[in-house]
Length: 168
Image (cartoon, rainbow, N blue to C red; front, side, top):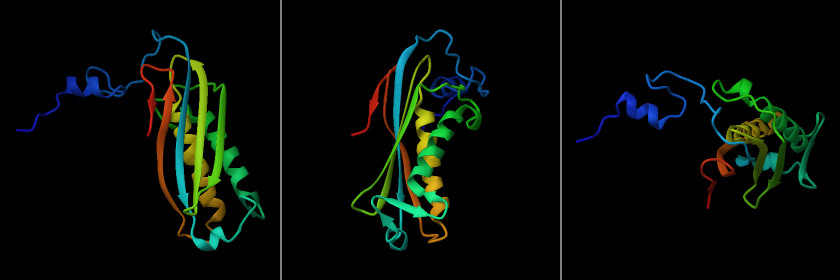
């Protein structure tokens, strides 16, 4: 027999639901201030016609460097995460760093690391930064091909909160 979740069980499972099951911002007022960091990764597959434009590890367009524009967009988006994701706390990041490289599979690997000293973590800021950097690459390269695929976005690591996490 399959167990059913009760409202109480769901509220304990999902941090953004109150005891009655209604959406709520997590109360961090009693949490300790610690240094927190999170790294997220997005992978973008570029088809051959786009990869042929790669020179010295970047793509140059009339609009400028694709990867450098993606870095700036990702950092800007990370700083606005609280405005984009309804129940996220607005945070003043201590740092946000984005690294973009191309691997042997013609995939662009975007790593976004966000850091803060605060009562809440920065996983969402890292995930948003990596995602928007990936979307920026798509936007700037779509004139060459619509076969660009954003394969995945995932949390790679987080430290400084209730529990640390590192993907193998």
